Amino acid sequence: MLNEKKSFLIYFDNAPMINGLPPEQRGWLFSALLDYGDRVSRENLSPEAALRLYPQLGSQAQMAFRFIASTIDRDTQRWLQRQRAGEERRQAKAGERPSPAAPPASQALRMEQEDRERLRRVLEQARKET
Image 1 (cartoon, one colour):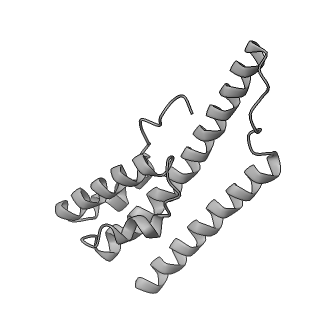
Image 2 (cartoon, rainbow, N blue to C red; image 1 turned 180 degrees about the vertical axis):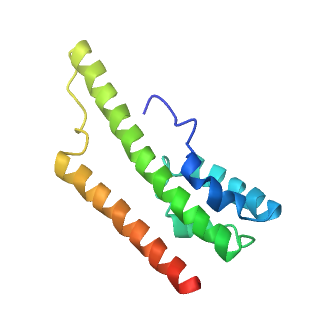
């Protein structure tokens, strides 16, 4: 891969969830998200595995992490697909044989379904904790 992922987004929709945390928990959450966002495109790191690296996170901060991690996962998959498509275009222009194609539409649909299922599990866990 030519480019490394250099960023991730935190959406304003998450502000109420983040602002409801004590300042120390916000700091740990931000540290965990930075670590996860940096590693998720290079490693097969699940949100749960990442959470085990941050035992300082309380239950509310863990829940916020899961929500935000699911959007990081979704955005990272889109970024990876764009990277692959760009590489294929570059190879096609240079007359090279293309590398394995970006995921077909069925795989993209499966990834979207996995995102929804992950979000459903997070919501279910949140309901149990309240």
